[in-house]
Amino acid sequence: MDIRERGHFKRPLIAGVILLAVLFAPLWGTVRLPAVMMTVHQFDAHVPEAARVVALHVNEGQRVAAGAPMVTLTSRALDEEERKARIRLKLVRLRLRRLAASRADLRQHEVLKRQLASLQSRLRGIAKRREALVIRAPFAGVVRHVMPGLKPGVRVAPEALLARLVDPAGAVVRALAPEGEVARLRAGARARFVAADPLKPVLPVRLEEIGAVRREGRDLTYLASLHGGPVAAQRDEKGRVQTRKGMFPVLLSPQDAGAPPCLVACTGTVLVTAERRSIAGRMARRIAAVLLRESGF
Image (cartoon, rainbow, N blue to C red):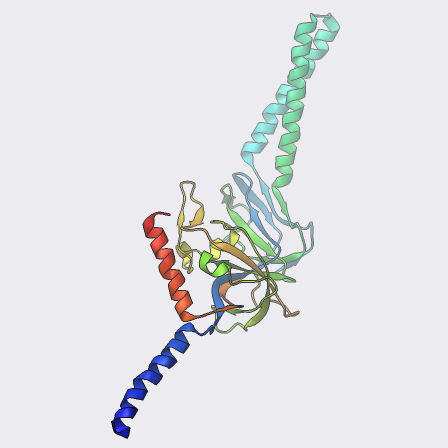
């Protein structure tokens, strides 16, 4: 065998050794997870019941103090309910006074007293509902997402979102991890949040905790495929968004002391430093998962 033949024999062998080294070497040291950066404190000003706007106290981007009114509403149905309750209350009190004057039987007196207590309780409930029609800021923050066309005189339906209040001082990153990647993640691991918007900076974050598997949550509102996100999701019989399979929630905290790049929320990816894994090991686990799923276990 001459030198050229030996060379032809060695090249495939060397290529095979390199391929095996690439397949089995623990090179895979990063986990990519779909994520969303959100403000820690967020308040959605929803309409408690069908109502009409009396006053809009805030504008888009305005800073408000805790307890400040955001929107004042009124309800014609509530006004009518209160009017009828007060008329009935007045009649019951009148009848009680007449009974006391005539010394009628005690049984009728007790019935009227129970009616009086019930009407007083109803009026207290109406007063609380009226207080709820003045929507106040539960914390100091910045107003976002004011309903288009919102102004005095506009009628709004129950549960309509009038405005959103966010606290720009803090943010968290919430990611969703599939079962096959959770074992590689550790609390304290370094990571980077890369926003889907290329104009936003890459933010260093730290993995704080891994929660129990679940299928719904506020983060899914942004990550679900129903809203253009990367996580396969569907609506249940009550209209709630749920993932098609359980995902593990991963909480990460920004390590940059500056203002977060997302005032309300922005989606992206977190690249987490994780336990290294070879390509062959990754493929073997995927094959095993498919076999288990197909076998019915």
